[in-house]
Image 1: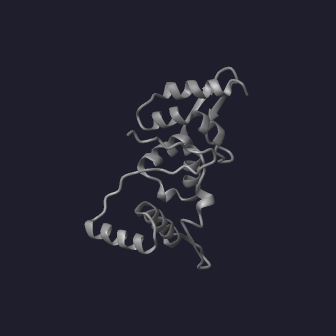
Image 2: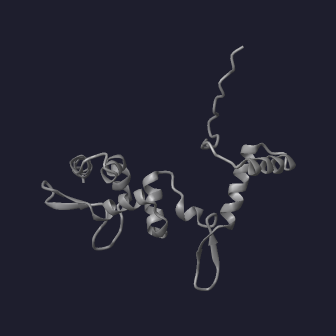
Image 3: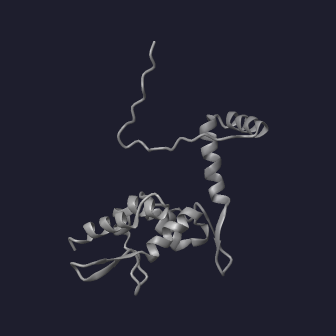
Length: 167
């Protein structure tokens, strides 16, 4: 008998699946805790991570109040990878991974000259410091590839010039 494939329903929340390694003792105790709460192991781990997000202090203000990772979710979360990077770099630059730092440097420093418009095109406005999130989003695959050494400056510039030629 063949097993039917599950179909996702419209509007159903999307979840990420990944493998995890547990020390045998930790796995056993997590299974016991999951049983006690009448949860599956996956549901228990998701719940435990949510609890941890409430307990990890991301920032402490001068007045002594603390903001957890969960408290900062709206500040950090965005649907697009590029928008998430901009939010993280803008709010918590010390938490950028090495690859994210390299991409952020390209966003902050890269410019190309548009001969037709007789102007330089940049992701970051040098006067205001404002990031053009739309341009970053539209160029994201090429920007990321160039920053991480998988693409060329010419490929990135070609996309930028194509996108900005309609302005």
